[in-house]
Image (cartoon, rainbow, N blue to C red; front, side, top):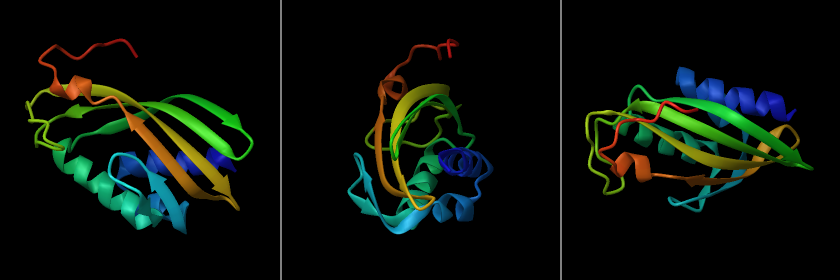
Length: 133
């Protein structure tokens, strides 16, 4: 079950298949993070589109996954070109890479709760993108 949800989330995001991404969330899913609380898959899609305006060639790669009960935790990496400022972070026009963690609580083959924590420091750095993955 969780494998399907994660596949839909990461593959859907990278293909810009917003119906697939939205479809894994329950209508009243609670999304925690810097932008929220938000509710439902449509809110997740709108947030993703906001990030894609800033990093239009963005690709997200799951690196590590852990499960306990109904919660799946994913450590992921985003790579792309930072072309439009976001969250008071000035765009550099350069390639960037940054990491984050997302926790998905699942029930009945849907995400019912979602937490995200992102390390934005690489977006604010003039240092070259690290190649270590």
